[in-house]
Image 1 (cartoon, helix red, strand yellow):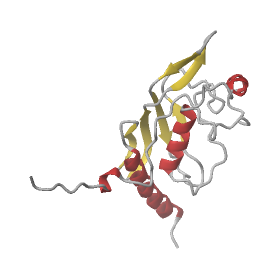
Image 2 (tube, rainbow, N blue to C red):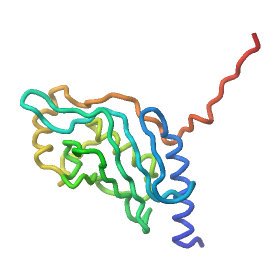
Image 3 (cartoon, rainbow, N blue to C red):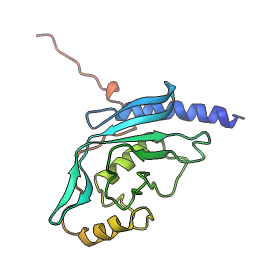
Image 4 (tube, helix red, strand yellow):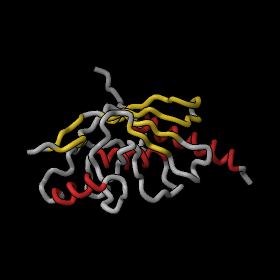
Length: 177
């Protein structure tokens, strides 16, 4: 039977493959801690429009955000820790003032690439992902609920990459001229 350390090592390697699959013009990342494929901390840039505040007549937006995703020593039993590096943090029901993302209930079967995509969907204000029961930001939640049917959401409709598909596995057969 595999030890917890062996299970973690296998998981980190599988997560690394998913993270490679989501690298694109929308999501890019660099490792901060660890050596591929055993990365324990990622600095991730997500190029989607997100709401960072509200003005008197319209929301204030940012088109790119940087987050740090740390895989704690007891990962995957414990969830990743996601902190917004960009300022200010998103004005979103699922982002704390401390810049930490409230990811909701953690399932250790959720792979890291899927987790990152789910987090990116909160930046887009995806109606299916936003958790109105989150304790993270009550002011943003009150505003969000009042505007939910206004047409503001999602605030970005960029198609996010699929963590289960590798772009590198696609090939094109070129015919001779």
